[in-house]
Amino acid sequence: MDWIRFEQLGEAWGADVRRWPADVQPAARVLIATDPVRAERLLDAERQLDRLLAFAPDAAPSETLRAAALAQARAGEGQGPHPIWPAWVFARPALSGVAIAAACAGLLFGGFLGQGSLTSARQDALSNEIQTETVGAADVPDSGRRL
Image (cartoon, rainbow, N blue to C red; front, side, top):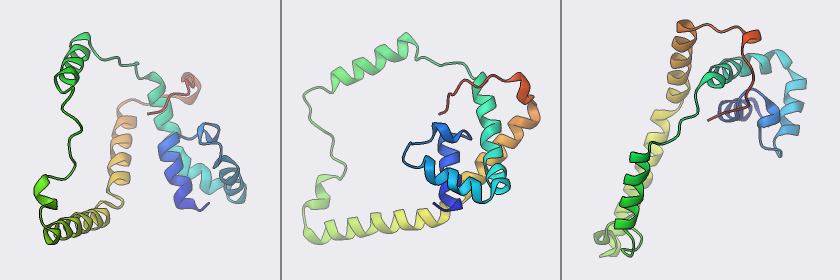
């Protein structure tokens, strides 16, 4: 495991390595042992987010939303799955190749543009939230919840 993967796992699963998938925990612990200061620095923001999430209420969908979702699902019964690609894409082999190449180029280009932006946006939001409401570590129970 490298530090990039370690940071990704921390963002996804939180600061407590015990909540991470079992197959990556041993490698994470080895990495932590090699440089505990760096590991603490990388997981500090996740630890703060964990504290904030501990206070978030459990949100259940309203009965109106539940009924609307069920009604929409029932209305679509028997229609079969919705195609991902429109039928015209496969009408001619040349068109399907062009459409698939364009989709792949869009994904590749979007991947390069999006690198780092989610992390920085998330850090900005977290920083703003922490500045708005500072919570002491001793005051926060660890509920173990994570999005």
